[in-house]
Length: 192
Image 1 (tube, rainbow, N blue to C red):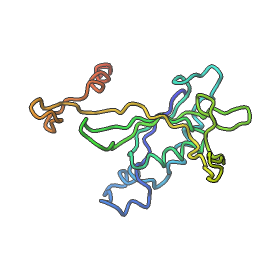
Image 2 (spheres, rainbow, N blue to C red):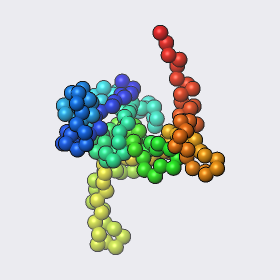
Image 3 (cartoon, helix red, strand yellow):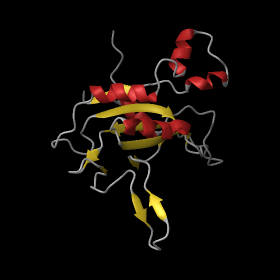
Image 4 (cartoon, rainbow, N blue to C red):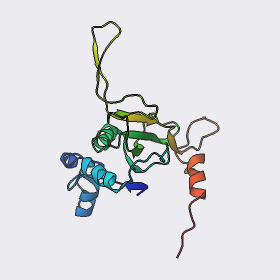
């Protein structure tokens, strides 16, 4: 496949005790990692993706896409990297332009580039991942982690209606941001 789109459960199985337990089994399975976790979802997705070839270039090579809560983004990056999807592009999703923290992240995970030694490298060919190096003072050892090449893209804002009097986002407005409107205008009309 050129692309795998996935919507894995957002919460670890042990979090089922936190918050309201879903009444219906379908919701429990959809919201909590009861039968599979992030590692299993990424392993399955990676197997479906076409191999990375010399003809593939940045933005055109096979990718796995998902949306996930921003507070678990680190778990997503780690799971993707464990199956070789270590080039990760992220867009933080903000409800409105006044929000200070993203609720979600859009994740685009692609196969890692490797050098002739089989070690992961960035698009620029720079080493990534674990390695021991000494600092300039020769005393402190640094360990480069994580083992992924993370690129944070421009944030995505869902709603952008501004109250002209106060200059803040109007919570009563339901107008989407220009980028969301642009996207929705390009969706096909519902068919029969």
